[in-house]
Image 1: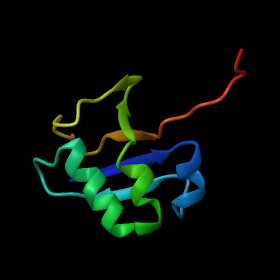
Image 2 (image 1 turned 180 degrees about the vertical axis):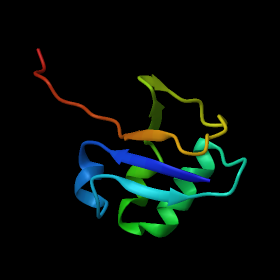
Image 3 (image 1 turned 45 degrees about the horizontal axis):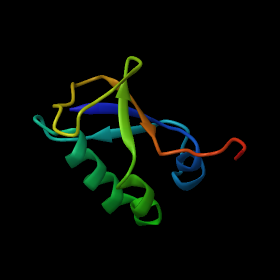
Image 4 (image 1 turned 135 degrees about the vertical axis):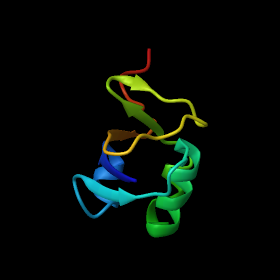
Length: 84
């Protein structure tokens, strides 16, 4: 299957492209995708362990099966704002 992955926040800096084309076997889950990405991009492994996958404005469960031809967003945890 072929997926399009769009990284956000710090992942835009750590991954080589603003959108990645990723080939994965049929039946791949969100968790398995993150493991594949961490192997291919060891510099981003730590952040990929806590990154969520989103599709069509919704976060996906870690065991959700990915769909061929779909675009997924890689959303790392973010923090910020002002403390009180």
